[in-house]
Amino acid sequence: MRGDSTRAVHAGLPAPEQGRPFLPGPTFAAPTHWAGDAAPEGYARFANPTWERYEAALGELEGGEVVVLSSGMAAAAAVLLPLLGPGDVLVAPSDAYPGVRTIALEHLRPRGVEVRLVTSHEDAFTAALSGATLVWIESPSNPGMDVLDLAALAQAAHAAGALVAVDGTLATPLRRRALDLGADFAMSSASKHLSGHSDLLLGYVAARDPERAAALRAWRGLTGAIPGPFEVWLAHRSLATLAVRLERQEANAAGLAELLAGHPAVTDVRWPGFGSVLVFTLADEDTAQRFLAGSALVTEATSFGGVHSSAERRARWGTDDVHAGCIRFNAGIEDLGDLLGDVTAALAAATATTR
Ligand SMILES: *Cc1c(COP(=O)(O)O)cnc(C)c1O
Image (cartoon, rainbow, N blue to C red; front, side):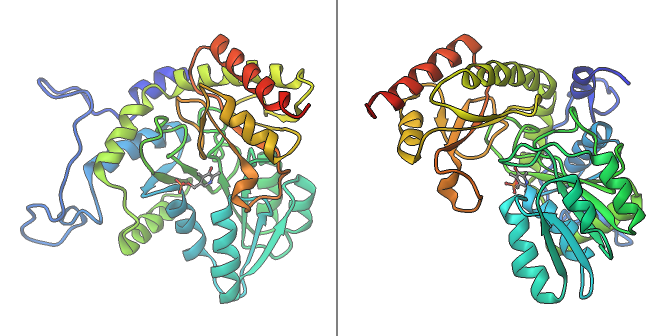
């Protein structure tokens, strides 16, 4: 297989045509000119060439057939809602993305789906597999940053007769290809690293089985969970730099993790060794807020994956079981020396006033 950056630069580009752009612009349409027998191409809720190029690109990176949707949550819902009915069993991590837990508890459970929420550990998943219909895995988990053995879990789940879906948003297909490791579905929010510039929402599901991809495509058309062509085109344009961005973000995350691990005001530094997200804990809520306010380069914002360094006090959402001083930090692509200086100064400012 060619290198990550080579694949990211060329993914999904059409064959060269004289006088045509490398990446054709977005196709804006509702109905198209379509005479004669009906076909999906006649109405843009069912088909759009801009989606198809981006799906081809992501399909090359994920190693499966991709369906792009309007957000990561639209992608998660497209896996969960049509697949699970009364009597079915969903096994999912208790620290899954909050929206996924809400779908499970507020929409699936009342319809008669048994929802088993387990801690994000291989043993806990394995113990809950009996009779399972679908196993939902998030790895690395967020904000716990636990990395699970996907191959072993997929094997155990399949042996129990369950399908496996992996939310791989934090890893990206350049760090882990869930389908290769045995998953049936690889779901991701492309609002994060895949687009990388904090300017759009998008999600997708990659499926190993083309029939499952076709079912997802039908769900998208039916529910209208469709992405705008301009967002998809922007995301495809940004895909070319994914590998380069990720390398720089990881180098910065590694440098910051080292600084934080050696700092007396910081505890419980978590960085899985890849990706841009690191999590660490300061003494309490006030210290964490002073740290965020005291930084000149780190934007206080939720989400992650973008080129700008950003951070938030995770407990402010009230959706995760985390310490009040827990910071989730996205390493951007700024110069590491500048980031280290800025974070050091912000930590000093955050801890100085407590004396
Ligand atoms: C952001 C995120 C989602 C939801 O994606 P949206 O594009 O915001 O809808 C799902 N899972 C994980 C792990 C995420 O980080």
